[in-house]
Length: 252
Image (tube, rainbow, N blue to C red; front, side):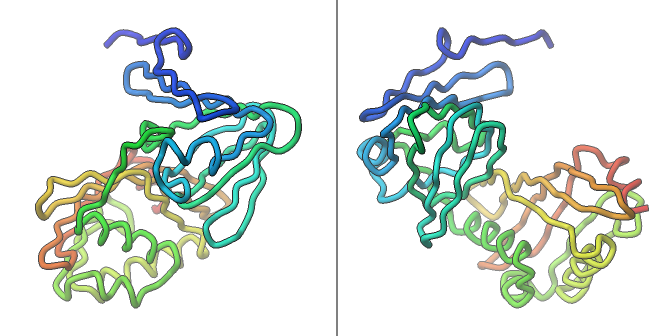
């Protein structure tokens, strides 16, 4: 496989805002990246909402602020301000505006960035919504919701040869394994959902990133889970890892 090189301005799709800047969407091989230039005075609710057609921005953003500053207000009223040199993970449901007299320039590599400043809307099907709800419950430590979503005879297959590997059969065994992950990492184990794919039937694939600290070592790992959902309940979870030997060593 050869190298792929692309120039954002020359080869990308130019998306002007209603005012105060623009975004350029470009790709090189397997990478798709959105670069946004947000000029002083830019505000999502004024300059992008007419293009998106939603009350607040419904795109998740994962990226890096190159320069400038921007304040983001979530739909719940909470606010954060991002500055040059900072990474960000912003969930959907927010307004935003440029702070100060300097343009804010940032890059976004979220899978959802292809929909930014565009009327294209992505909709979860019923099973995707169940899986998304499950990830949110796991992140919140909400075992009651997890028990509600999992079938009583659910099976989760954890690959590898570590102390957490194996087939966990039954909802109590699966939830017990989740608890063990917390115990082994002193409560630091976290999973962030990146993307969902569905076959429109009973299968959903979730791509995620996990972060944990154990014995003074922090590990960031990527993986996926193939979910089988029947009758609104998760019946089977088949895990796959991008670096299985590294994960085994971490949980040895």
